Length: 403
Image 1 (cartoon, rainbow, N blue to C red):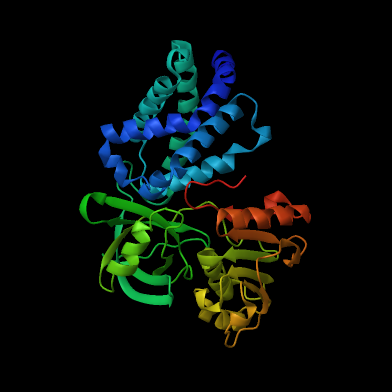
Image 2 (image 1 turned 135 degrees about the vertical axis):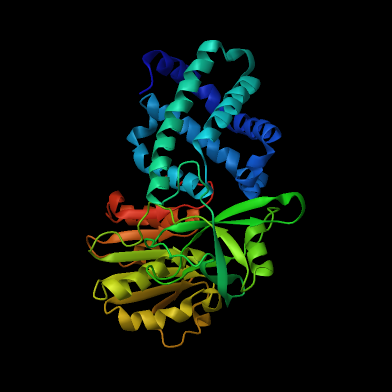
């Protein structure tokens, strides 16, 4: 709990910090990377280039400070902190890195706000930061222990590519087994792994998260990677391009243990899976899992894609329909006539997903995965239709946060 003295100072200075949030976080990243260039191997350089990372950090720090001082509209912070902790654990963030972040973040506040930052202001915001840091450190320690990562040990393990399958023009699946011949850890549908690759030249190591798209309990893992093509001046995806163009069968990749607090299957009631584009990967893991463990469970899959030819892993759906006795499939393609489906029982519509037309069974658990604007559209529509917020789960990759 924030002390009363610090709470008063934070409440008084919060508007100024919020107004200059992105300038502060932009200066923070510059300072930190100048002093610790090795941390560039952890942070997503694409998000740094587009400014998404500094915007997300500014919003998170301001929202947490608002929460500590009684604002934030009663938003429960536990799930948000869990999501951040899982992401940090998948990157191998350590407790020893938090003082580095804190030191440069507070210095950036002083540099941007100038004389307004008195010793009392520094002390109050330092308290905010360390309350956040200690909560995350504790959560991350529990995650590392659960994943069998020794204290202070590396999260990374070498995995060998045993199969590479081109699913669509822009999507490739990699089947992986441990390079050391050891056991394949289990995972829950909806969890993801981090993949660390060494890029050419001075680009160093980069890390990205990919949902596990295969069946839990199999003797291998599978990830399905979409090539990220830069739009409106944004760079192409460095890691996705590397995986598509440079990684072949027999190569090895460094992977983290599975993380991610969001279950794609929820409880034992009806299940509604809603995905768009490559966001279908956790849904496919969920369907494969249920085909083996609960084939009679009522499941509805709603998926949106540009066209049938762009729909990755589509060829697996007919087999899943044979095994899942109560699976219904509804597809939205931009051009319904381009479905080109073979052996798939599905209702196909053209254009964008209309949340009002998504079939919802009372009491269903809903899992969303896809671009943030898509999930916001669907979630808003489902809430308006009376689906309880606590029954809607979603996974946000990258620096965005779905409110």
